[in-house]
Each structure stands twice: as structure tokens, then as C-alpha cells.
Image 1 (cartoon, helix red, strand yellow):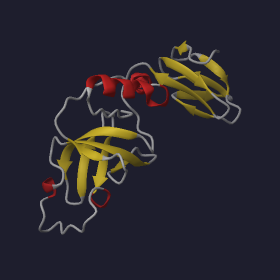
Image 2: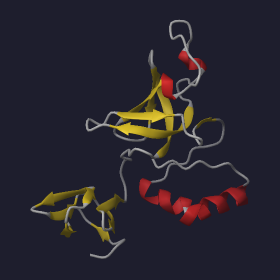
Image 3: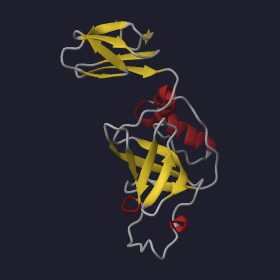
Image 4: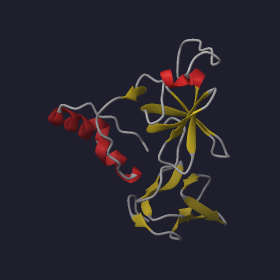
Length: 179
């Protein structure tokens, strides 16, 4: 199999040899694709990047989310995934907040758009996000353009070259989430 080759579900990809697998399944140390996508093989991992479908969160990803629901201790965020993420109050604001007296919609309200970072993904797919990242912020105005997760790397370009060129040519501030 060649790197960057498009593979079908069930395609044999090689021997596992202790490597991590993503979007693949293993039978007798043989690795097969679970999805239609582009093959990526390295010394550490065999993975298939899906050509279509939903985003599956990973710790460290910077994403764009929409506030869906406000709880007593934080916010539920739609992250364009089969799973929602939770933004705890302590990961969203620096100051002490008396939740008995303060309406949390003062900080983030339903339908607000945020650029945040995934800090936790459990085995049960409980996802936590944080605003404690230098790039994290509430986004105002503008438009949201959805692209498939597979194309995110192309929009960013090598070393951010493509996104920088788009920013310069359009005079826009652009945020690209992994989702």
C-alpha cells in the first residue's frame, strides 16, 4: 500500500507491528480500513483519514463550537460531531463566579460561536473543551464555512501558508477548526 492512497472499507493495509491504528480494525495483527478515506502510514501509526463524515474529537484539537445549552456549572457545545462537548465554568472564565447570583449567559449564550481547545476525551466519549488557550475566544460576526475534516489540512496548507495567503488576499481574520 502506498501513502496517501484512497482505500475502501475492508481494505488490507498491512501488519500492525505494535502501531496505533485510527479508523481501522485489527484481526490477527492484520490492519484493515473501517472507512473510505486516505491512507497515512508511519512508524508509529496506521490511519485512514475519512473522505466524508463527522469529526471525531482528539485532545489538543482546536475547534469551532456553538453553545447549545447552559447548565449550572458550564455550557454544552455542539462541535459538529456525534458527541457534544462540555465547557466547564472553570475552563471558561478567570474570575470567581457565584452561580447562585450570576446568569452564565452573561459570558456565553445559546448560539454563541467559540474557538476553543479539546482538553479531555474519555473512553465513553465525554468531551471537555477549554477557553484557556491563547487562541481561544468568542467569535463575533462573520460567516461559518463548513468543510469536510479531510480538507482541513489543505485549507491550512504547509506551515499555515495557504491560510495566511487567504487572510492577506481577503483582509479577513480566519479561524480554522479541526472539526
